[in-house]
Length: 94
Image (tube, rainbow, N blue to C red; front, side, top):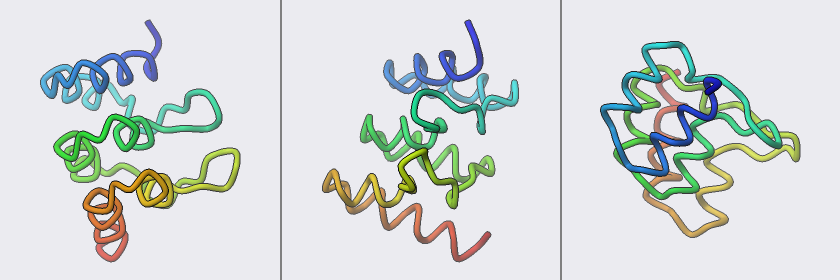
């Protein structure tokens, strides 16, 4: 299993221990389909705990996917405003 698949599996299952293990293995900035990083997949699952964990571990909140979207833009588009605000707040500390 490659790095991005390991992160996606952890995110889809909601298993924060597996997510932490994948982060420690250096998978935080791995890119999947469309240029999505694990942060994008975390937004898609709607798991604010996972998003927070990735941001605290140093996830790049400025990364743009292949369509020019950031993770915070995706969160806002999907109506996940608490997650969008969390990501935007992380940008002010970067």
